Image (tube, rainbow, N blue to C red):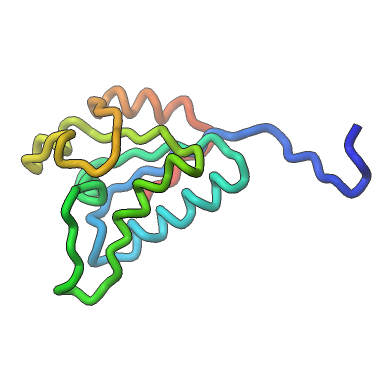
Amino acid sequence: MAEPWEEDEGPVKKFMFVNRKAPYGTIYALESLEVVLISAAFDQDVSLVFVDDGVYQLKKGQTTDGIGMKNFSPTYRALEGYDIEKLYVSKESLEERGLSEDDLLVDVQVMSKSEIADLMDDQDVVLSF
């Protein structure tokens, strides 16, 4: 039995974060990453999807010297430490940009857009960045 001062944490919800934007030039990618880490801290079921230019967020060898911004791409390698292991990438988005799974800095599951759509249908919350 819970103590009176302890709150019921409630059921775990499935959160999917859809990353559509390139990593730099807008705040979307960094904001998404911050919200993902916060969600994981509350023990939710978190998954990330990278589509369109969002696939560039995971590209190896990013440098930000020329734009004067901090390179936050190494943070994606730390996600596993937060029990965030569900990373999905659109096969079509990779192909359209001349990229392959080998170009990415973390392990992902490459899926077709229709498979990703099916996965989205199974989520409680889907947030697009």
